[in-house]
Length: 252
Image (cartoon, rainbow, N blue to C red):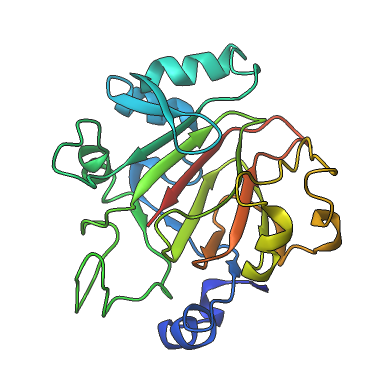
């Protein structure tokens, strides 16, 4: 993994040739720009005031939707510390991916269009999905995986491979997120074909070799930071436990 500093240290060509093409994780600090009325940081309270009436999907520690609820109710539950039970619920509020998708974040992204900008090194040309050849803009264009991820302290996404086999850029808006990412070669030690090791409560008898493999990435992302999650990596994300923090992310 490469941990880079400011956004001026990398351009689109280097990003594509050095990281994207070589399937190399990248962490960049202070490169996600927040502007306008919801400038740094995007705390949950003003977001709840703006989008509180929207119904959002709430997931478990993977990708099974459990229920929908108003965004304001979710934020209120966090404030009242009512999300401490396991598993901590996790909002994954995506822009439209399918024609029959009823809960989507497109209107919220449109309202926030003046309040953020993509990292300068994010490619603007030659996307395959969505098929945008020139001048792509993640702020305003439709990207099927674009979404808000929101979670209370203590939440996590269990170890998995991204089901879309896609490269993703995650931008941290507020709070902190800890990533643990393993290389594809570690998969045979982390899975037995029927299940994947739980890093919180590992079954050493079922997965005897998992402790011998080292993660390619073990890093905490803070507001303004971005992370390139390359395809085929085995990843797990969780909230930091050093302090009680809430978490809001943008992914595209």
